[in-house]
Image 1 (cartoon, helix red, strand yellow):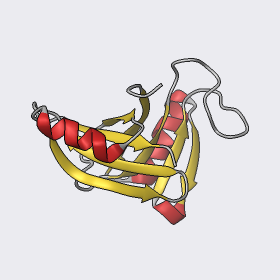
Image 2 (cartoon, rainbow, N blue to C red):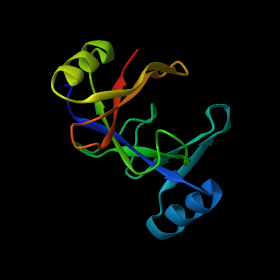
Image 3 (cartoon, one colour):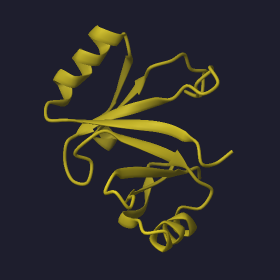
Length: 125
């Protein structure tokens, strides 16, 4: 099913401090990915493939605060980022960054909705 929220991102000025905060306060499992300069956080139980085991639950990431991610972002699953960005533009949104590979895990993009909110898109490989 596409169109569902599948991920969140929390930007931080001090990533190490953010990792410790969310680990200590909420018991999130913190998995730094130095090769991507990113931290995966598990907020809910996952299976051997890292997928959530609770329906509707999502995990996320912590990243260095830099453009375009300067505030919290939700990420929506789509089957075709390019086609979705075309729909977004027609509906009054604006592409912030187009389709980019994320390692071998899939593809990501960012857009602003008509109210200026930054939202992420995710496409599986």
